[in-house]
Length: 188
Image (cartoon, rainbow, N blue to C red; front, side):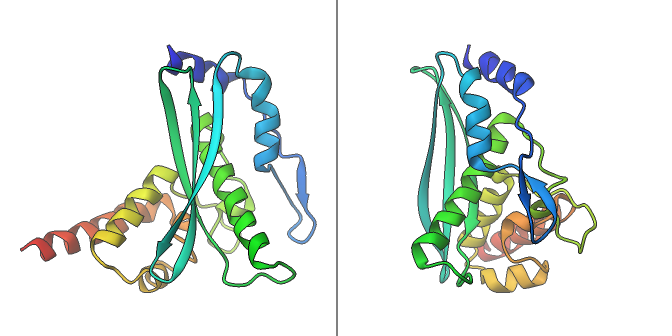
């Protein structure tokens, strides 16, 4: 049973934060660190990670999907990351690659239950630790934003975030309910 095998991997997986951000002074793990740690645990399971490019308003998002399969059944998770409009020292391909790597990391985090709440890139309150929503929750919010034709820039500004993935778990219900009400009102 694939879910049992995945649960065993989740329990055994050790993916330490072996990278150091010299500018921010914090440790983190990369997508490559997770892949290196999980490969010996896969056994006969197949792991794939893929990307799709999605346009939301005038912004480009990379939607990464991590899938584990036994050849017959599969389990997948997704995560989204927005391309930065500009990033000093990077050309356009590098910006897309950076967003892809970030989205893939969080798709793998979701699939293998890796908790990144203590990472600097998972916080959003000037150093105060805030648990961010997961990839599935972000996908729900993106879907509602799309269905309600909500201006994503206004939405992000209302929650004081730069991308939906930064939405704190405590704000998810508020955002979800707000968008659901808007959707219900449009249907009337």
